[in-house]
Length: 221
Image (cartoon, rainbow, N blue to C red; front, side):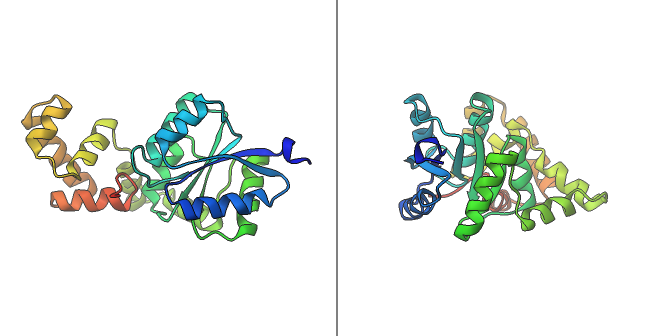
């Protein structure tokens, strides 16, 4: 296979050293070619508009401007033909489920060995998905039929409004400012807060923020 016919890759990660190192490794694989690199979801969207449309995107979960989850959702809705692999150090079950819901085809740890990286890219290219033994084990155990795991899955099914509130509650905005931003009443905000306290089993706004960070819903850059 010539490099011209190789599977096209775009890397989206705000850590330049890691991104460039990955590009070097991937370009040493005969069957793959990195055609573009970007820092965040906003730059990726522009790159797609400019014609850098790959077969596979390696997408960092935690990025400034537009994060990996929002970017993955955008790709799922606008470019479903592009296969998305998530680069992350997070591996919580809830984060995995949320990403699977928006069409992500697999997950890679950032310290992945080059041989496993090549296998992952080949698996996604040929089979349409890649799940490591670790990820497969987490998902398999999660979907075992018992009350604890059913509760875990239920937690992952947060509505868009709940996710939006959770992101804002993880900032320094007051609840009144959040209500104004969401165009709902302070009483409705109290309802979202209390419902999430119960659903996520936390007791404070700090608990909400910790949950959001641990599960890749927000990131602090």
